[in-house]
Image 1 (tube, rainbow, N blue to C red):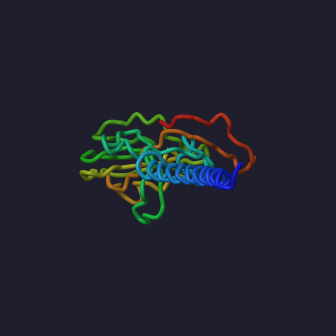
Image 2: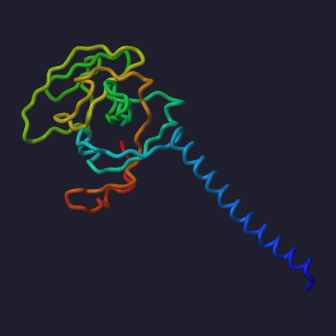
Image 3: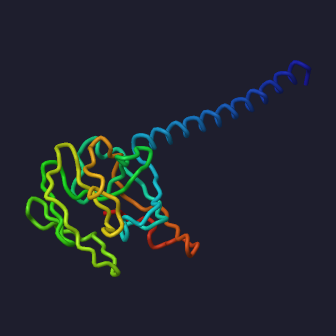
Length: 198
């Protein structure tokens, strides 16, 4: 093998190494860009820090939120939504849609009335230790706004306290628990993994 052949072989090895490094860098950049696009426009992960949605969501549940769905349809009654907290938009809240624009809301005791009719409310949870009887309304929800409540009705800062939620503050619909961690027992809640949120 002459000197020119050796130089050519060395150059080829160097080019292959550069090509391999370039492929890895490009793959990483594309993966990061895709992840950012998905997080921004399609799906985002959130953690549940409080008990306001018990028993549907527990402290330590990690959920996925569909940020794409409400580009094509309006939120429906019963949807569990993530939104910017109206009094501090740096914070995200999660609640259930109870009423929509134009509807009248009245709460008597543990019963919600929408336009004078009792709401079928299977997700509502009341602590056994409380005898709280709520009286709220009547109020009419403005157009383009929603009345939202936590499922844990005795422990939820929601529309009863801070008012109506504007449509543009909604970030997306919660649809699945992908991880759940019990900090007291320091153990995963395996039965909750993959559970759909209704």
